Amino acid sequence: MSSTINAWLGSEMWWWESCVPGATEHMIVVLGYLSQPPENLSINPGANFKVLMDMEFQHIATNPNFFGLAGIMEYLCSYCDEENVRWQGKLFRHYILEGNTTHLSTDPYVLSHIQNPDFEDGTTGWTIHPAEPGSMQTASYPGYS
Image (spheres, one colour):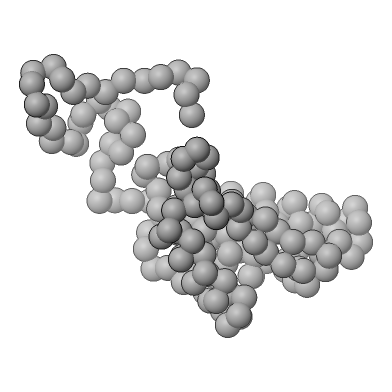
């Protein structure tokens, strides 16, 4: 995952600076931490969204393409759950106020304590107890995000 962040965020910043020299010092990077309805960026049930947030901040703090950046912010706290709002505050303190460049979290990005989190393989890995026979099932809704 970090290679994806490195490839996208860093190249975007390099592109802006190459097109508009001096853009970095006037630019604010806006990350998304929407994590509850009606909009949610935490869409992979097998991944730790808080670790993703940490990886984004750490990349910005260490990639030379961001040196001199005017600012960083998260969008949109009214669509963010309370836990991630608090985590974002810790990330700001760790990276921006204290100037750290190492990850704040020691948790893994890929969650290993849950198997088949998106029910792609039906109920494999899950112990289910239906209230009545046939009252529980997995299903797919194409086109639904």
